[in-house]
Image 1 (cartoon, rainbow, N blue to C red):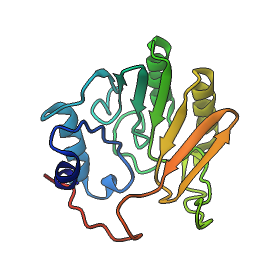
Image 2 (cartoon, rainbow, N blue to C red):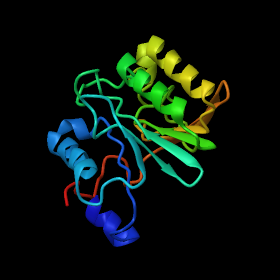
Image 3 (cartoon, rainbow, N blue to C red):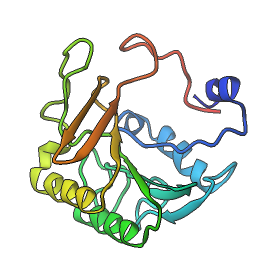
Image 4 (cartoon, helix red, strand yellow):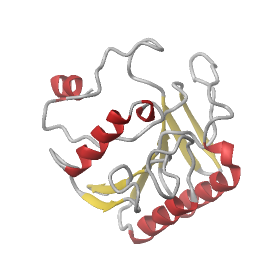
Length: 192
């Protein structure tokens, strides 16, 4: 992916990776994302690294009048490579502390899994209905309430490989779908 992004956007284009379930299939992907945080171009305008156990795969940064938060939803409170997506209490507490000190006007939170999966806006296809953040409803509700309380502008996710948007009690969820071409075909290599 790095070579493809470099060739299209340039080597100096800022990047802020979000870990997803596919990275967990081969831990070399996770190591690449961790190392991206630790060295190389680093993360510009970093405000805060994640809690113990996912310091490199959860973080926040500011840009102009916006605050951005990247959550590793595969953090289980100890390790950043759990197998289920969730916003566990330790991650929620970190997010609560991060949002409490934010001074920026607009807030965008990124995570891989949707709060609730929504059908694709073009095809109506539904994926991961029982395998998203709604699988752990108590944590999901606490997550939503926190985002609404802090007037988060949008929660941006992927996972479903669908493109959609929805409003849940005043909170916008934007599912970016996928950008790798035809479903199931990935022309990119993840390593530099």
